Length: 205
Image (cartoon, rainbow, N blue to C red; front, side, top):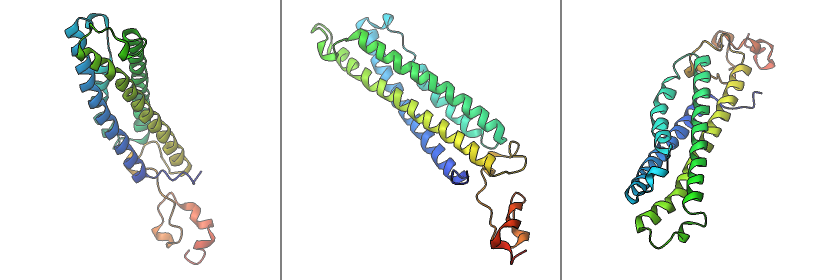
């Protein structure tokens, strides 16, 4: 499986992109949800509309730093911690998306344009934002699925590299790129013993 080119720097780059997108979209979700909740409370509808979106967004922002700081730990700790934590966040965002959909169908089954004229303009605006919140929740779920799949492929690539003591070394060191078999033997890393059987190294042994 050496065609899986998820080397360390590529994984770090993808991780930064995914975590940055999660934090940014969660902040947007938090502010938008805060506005809609305030409107519902103001018009008297808030008591009947529980929402976990605020807590999910806040929990996501707080979780990113512990997930990033786990990289210097052993590879096993990083994989287990980030995989479990990512699944927890994924479940929370899927539940949040489902709750937003339920709220939307309860408040305006026929769409926000069908709300009675007696409702305030702010409530119409808040209703329009529920669909946006649902979209952000599903988008964050997609980010997490991509990261979970990438982390799994990184694990496969690392195990395929046959590095000794793979689970105990720091994640910063993994996965190792292909061995430099064209270099002289004294410059080979210890996990590149298979280079001895490579025809490219016959004249350098």
